[in-house]
Amino acid sequence: MSKKIAFLGAGSVGFTRGLVADIISYPAFEDATIALMDVNKERLDMAKKSVERIVEYFNKPVKIVATTSRKEALQGADGVLITILAGGVQVWRHDIEIPKKYGVDINVGDTRGGSGVFRALRTIPVMLDICKDIARYCPEAIVLNYTNPMAMLCRAMQAAYPKLNITGLCHSVQGTSREMAELIHAPYNEITYLCAGINHQSWFLTFDWKGKDAYPLLRKAVEEKKNYYSDVVRIEMFRHMGYYVTESSGHNSEYVAWFRKRPELIKKYCGGKAGSWNPGAYAFILKMYLGREKRVNGMPLWKKEVIDWIKSDKVSKLGGKLEYAANIFNAVFGDNNIFEFNGNVRNFNLIDNLPYGCCVEVPVEASRNGLRPVHVGALPAHLALLNNISARCEELAVEGALSGEPNKVYQAVYFDPLTSAVLSLEEINRMVYELFMASKAYLPQFKNYRLKY
Image 1 (cartoon, rainbow, N blue to C red):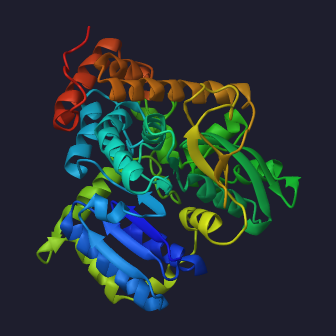
Image 2 (cartoon, rainbow, N blue to C red):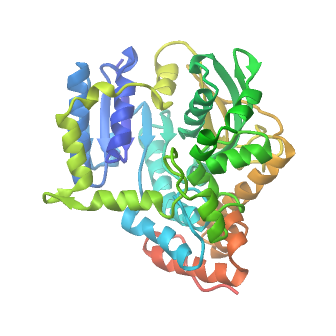
């Protein structure tokens, strides 16, 4: 029987293109129904035309449905992919620009701290509505979330709808492991590892080449100047922590207290040395998104780029399966092989020294039996200490989002490593209040936003 895969937020065209190409490359999905759903009709149209180009190129008997109706997309779906952005870039920008007024310099702002918390507060109500519809129209579906802030969204969805098959996917684990292999000049298919922690701050607890510990080779490799300057923050953390962390330098600099609290430190560690895709410049991704909104020949740049892609031969470069989604769906619905990936799930006896029930990123096995997270045990104490701070802040933020209690939100931001390194409690109060004001149209769960003292 042919399968149905629903894309919610299909207007994230880059993600949609790659994921569709990966999925239909498997025999189990070559006659699948791909249901594309987005609230933005213009982006939905571009997604549909892109997928039609992919299906034509790979010559598969795939059925394409494009709709603004979530019910139509979800009804009878076997798999669901979520890649939404609640509120759009003109709302998200406040999460970056308001903290900057108070002296908190943000690089991406989609994961934690005040910027990540308010992105979560806006997105959690939408995610819970999505889960409500999934429970109604396709309760057995495998649900894969790609939307950030990953940990807080997955924690909220999995708490509110524990019977749904939900996990969160991030490309940082497989992406970082490939970069590590390149640093030591090892073929990737000869690398094995164990990685666990929290999203965007997981740790390679083991990293082996042909079954032998490759960390000594990695320590030597990162001392080379060109390698060091390609990823300064992450390599500094490796030097002092002893373990390699997921996520690139720009992201990582936001999650700890050490790199962005003074201008001279930002210049030293996040100054844009040659070789790094995102060393940590202020508002890096925001400026990229705003740039794509600019009009070229009467249309937004993002739309022109999609049209140019459709006309090009770049479709031939798709289908590398670098994202996990297609492999997971294939393991569950296709062949009988087990596929192991790192997923975001609640910590029910998975990592012993992180908060029970928080969202952790651990190995998960996908098979005909569904999704099964793997017990990791205890992290090294110093890694658990760092993870615990952010995990407990995320717990407070989710509690606030679900209860509508603003005090929980203030408390979540009080203890954020970067924010607390830069601001006093009174300054954090004022910043959080201003963030509430900027997003209040998207926060129906809160009844008051008073300045807290």
